[in-house]
Length: 241
Image 1 (cartoon, rainbow, N blue to C red):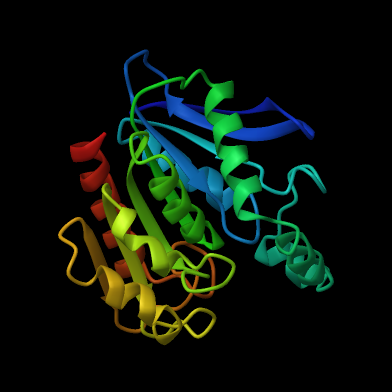
Image 2 (cartoon, rainbow, N blue to C red; image 1 turned 120 degrees about the vertical axis):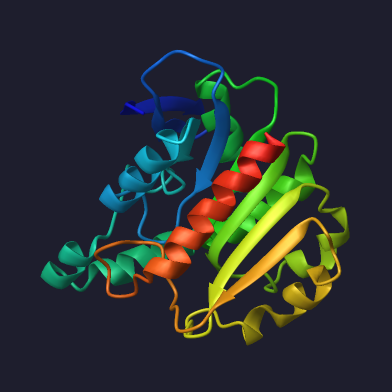
């Protein structure tokens, strides 16, 4: 399926926010997905993932969560190699994010493309997984399905997500690898234990997969984990949205 992609601006209380908007070229009532990015920001890998998702029949938005500090910051492997200090900048930007701010950014992004009602799926990579949980418990009527790829911060204060899993009513898929030392399985144990008996939540563990397994061309890419999580997400969203 042919797709198109553009950067648009959403109006926010902090000024314009860039939003990556991807959709099938043909007109239609496409299923809607909001993506919470990972630490390196909106970059070519993000664009490729959204294009792949749009080719499956989804309209996708990705808000620039760093917009209060810098427009469209991104840290690719090539940029890190050329300037190692960019990692410090990335970590500093991560430190400016708040749960409430991230949720507001998604609301502003969906409003900018006219998603005023109807169900939305949400995907989160790394730090974005926490935002998926927040969205699904905050607006279970709206964010009816979610997917977490190599999640982070599911047991961290403030208001740790594992404490509110009983409010998850939508379908949720979680993928994590045994080789993830950045945010290990043990670090999420309280969350995984809390959802273990829930029929609407699936946790898949991939042997040998590391943090950031989603991205082709990255040192941590793990094709089985990446492709399986993508397929499971498409299946879940197709059924729920």
